[in-house]
Image (cartoon, rainbow, N blue to C red):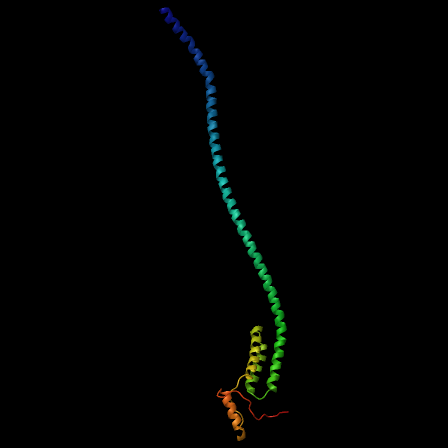
Length: 211
């Protein structure tokens, strides 16, 4: 028994240097493996950070693309509006040019109409001569005014013509020169017709003949 125990002790003592030698050989390998694992962990952290950044940038890119798409639609609509406004401006400028041409043509026409109205009043019977002459004078003064639009001038000239036309379609009771009593019947008849007390009819009245 003592011999066996001695052999076991001797074997254990002999194995101790071997295990110590193996630890010295394996320690660098283990340390290097630990370094590799630590480096891999750090690399994975970097990869995770880069992935998060990529996801964030991708989301920003998608958002930006949607904004760009909306801006393109808006710009397209805006271009259509600008084109329509440019066309309206062109049409307006053309209309202004046409109005200028018409105004240059209508002004001489209105002057001729006023001249004709003045001649008509002068050659007509002496009916409201002062009122009619003042109307013509007012028209001539109006034509020299720059603050009156051509359309208003034309309206006023046509209005004066309308007044003269109405004189021929209406009857009124007015004061005239005293006549001989032989005309009393016809005068009375005329006054009654003017006051709509009698149906319109022919009258025999004196008319002055002027050279």
